[in-house]
Image 1 (spheres, rainbow, N blue to C red):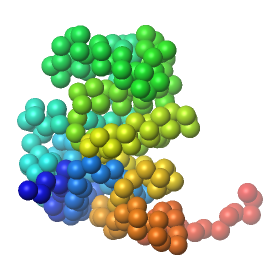
Image 2: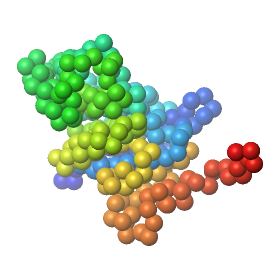
Image 3: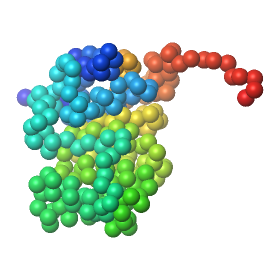
Image 4: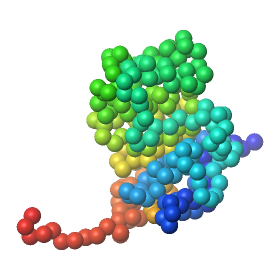
Length: 252
């Protein structure tokens, strides 16, 4: 029997007053895929992630996760999902290890198992040396890695990352990339948004380009590799026409 899509939307709509942020979005992402959702600022990427993870309610359409309609109030879906928003909500007066144990306990994990998993994730993400430091003193990259550890500690099958590489250094970005690709290799499904097209081209099995709330293009890695241009070329072709091209002022 064929498995249902890991993440599926049908005619998904989100309105804010008179603004349509997501406009009839149709996605179908199979299990185990690394999917990149790309688009210019204001295209609807973050809003889409918030709808898929239940932090915002849709104005219309359907969301199915592993074949079941999303119910944001059903605790079963919270165990299914791992989420890292663009600005992770960390308790900055906690220490890194404390934050992880607290998160695991919120998922009903026993204290010993929570501590073991916290230790393993801190090592995986290169945070062991900072585990007893206050989160308030962490760099932006360290906070991103800690937020990813919090999202992984309950071993979710569906993972949503909003701009995980934004504002992090090259070493942190490489660690995050390695962890995420390892997760899909083990069967998890990852959806991420990013402005770093070169990274998306390297790690995503499929990318979708969203513009004005609509999915305007999808391309698989093999098709992109066989094309003469890069992902950046495709992105410019699809969404670049809206950018104004004013002349450089003479005084600059």
